[in-house]
Image (cartoon, rainbow, N blue to C red):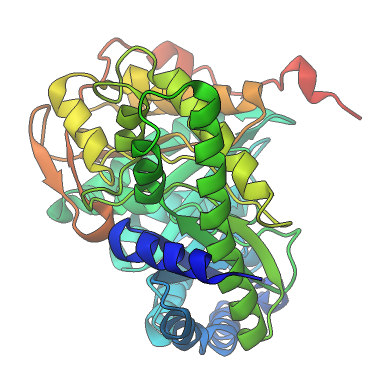
Length: 454
């Protein structure tokens, strides 16, 4: 039972420390929509999404009113569209028609984003996978709420370098297609190594084939709550620091568990997982970088940053898993540059570079996220950045991702404004030395030796 003190404490977290449920994400399987006729396929997809999600937004708003808990986003994830569209789609334009159907359904039910315009190509690409990947620039420029992701590697299969090379070109092309909006399309496109099947966060959410027909996943977030808790133990040793983070993560996750159970009951959809990630926003006081500073760093990026982030990530997970039996998704600390005011400040101060961010991804829950880079960055350079991040995920048996935005027409020192939760970002410099010969080799980087655990 929750006692009166805990209710008061939770209310304070919501009112003063930016505690919120970042998203309720309804996962929907589209496998039963498959048809070789494209028009019928699109109709099946629209009907399935509308029927499953027509009450999602209303349910989220009712839960928010009843419990006084802000629920920022209501979202949908669907089966990777490369699997769904393979029988009907014979060209990239055919896949774009599905993207438009997803967008129309998302508008109709009122969700913020719909994820799953995706392909899983860690070992190789089917013709449908390649057609979908090549359709991404047009699809993201022609839709408003569709998010796309591609899984390029895993610990079990290695890294598909043909797909890595192609995705460098696709990211650059997406930037060009959406250059009138400061290359915003790239903010809705992410590449993964070891992508989870149950991630509720965009742009990487898709409904994995291991999931039930429909599922409710909830993502909670509370960087401000953790920072406030740590302010009370300044100067204390690491044992007390760790205990404070664990206890706070437990409380935050309990809020997510409550919302997930209630949404599951009201929608009559099974409860999947709570993702207990610390996902920052541009709001002051809602920053992972500020937590690192509270731990003892002048800026994120200073010596000790990777150790501080490793500590934070681990204690968040330890606290969260005691609060819910079904913790999943990404779960831990996110470090998106444009969505975290503290990260932006660190970049501007010269404390945080792309290379330091890459080192930090070894111990956090995602990867190089929402990083604006010069618009004239070569496609092969982007592929090289992706390959480095995929290698970190593959070798360390963890999820890593890359969401970089080459902003066409802008260079280092300039700023790009995305708005809303996507925030704004300084254009960060990229290493200009060539990796062309490496990226152009083709083929696959084999799985590491520790992948063979049968």
